[in-house]
Image 1 (tube, rainbow, N blue to C red):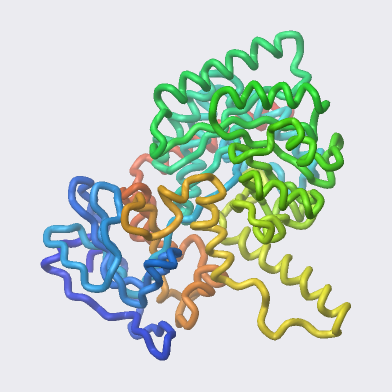
Image 2: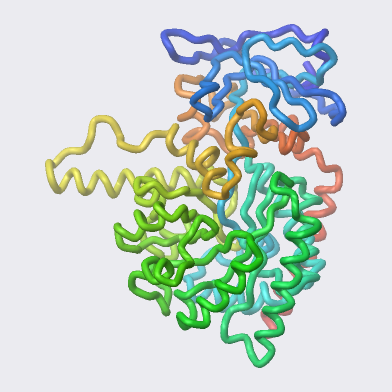
Length: 489
């Protein structure tokens, strides 16, 4: 049976059925499916999937349909009639919102694997100072497009690209072109040069600010567009306080959110009670995202939550490099809007599922040690669940980027960012807990279909982009050239 077919000719297979409140699997694996090209002008109907909507009002459906029209989710219900729609057979599939990668340096896709054994200092000395600052606009476009396709292949439909490589207006324009070509929903965080940058620092910073203002007023003006504009800078934990505050105030004039790294144990210029200092300076607000933020005081997370500050955590890199224990559980408990990210493709990849698994294990380990010290036992019911972790990656991640009105749940009226996970494969059958299956059992290879803004981007387990193989060959060639140049100094 084809993955995409006509609604009038489709015979439904009832794969998932609700039994005593649990979903059970009742069919053998399907044969490989053909991949006809989807017609974007026609509605899309996902038929008969187990729907994890991540919307408490919509709920979950062991056997549900999802109707998509012109990129928007129109209905979520059993037995939707949609004559003439392109049908995606959801039998033995789990449908859920596309995942939101809340922090990634996407252009580092070109340096994949170079940080396998890097410390934090080694990463900066090698990747930041010998690769990122040598990338041309063409390099940034290529790497961002390739990185977007990697994320889509792993079930991520939205990324926050903290683009250290947008060192000029031309680099920023190239990043936008790469994201557009990759077909992913994105926040592009335009970088501000760190201080000190040399005698022309003010001029460089001024050109960046002027260009960002022009993008916000023009190409990236739409509040619900596929690419949203932010800005980013290293921030006060990397530089003297007063110049950093001046930069933040200047960026605030653009009228878009600002992202900064804060609070990690390893930051050489880390400042005590930085969030309280930012609040005193009038810079703690709902247009600020703090990244990592591992070791702020407990009351500072509550202060940040009260001011609407967003937080992005990247668990695997933080644990490996010594930033500290991931902060997003503590931040979420304080009421902050939290997203989870992968951070540096030069070290880790594979989308969000590995990050969620690492974070869950690390937090349960921390809580178990506390419980064992106090009672010599651990909680019979783990205090962190698979469902909660998937929420961090979907609706929670969307809130953590201010995009929850657009994406993050399978909700009528939102844009159609949806993935289908095979539930009949060697790693995924049988099904007893769909959320647990996705989080703890499935791999990127089990994510069969990815829809971004109503367009099918991965189908039958493969990216639909015909040019993807050639793109990745160009990426390989350019990566080798850059590595050779870096080795020469």
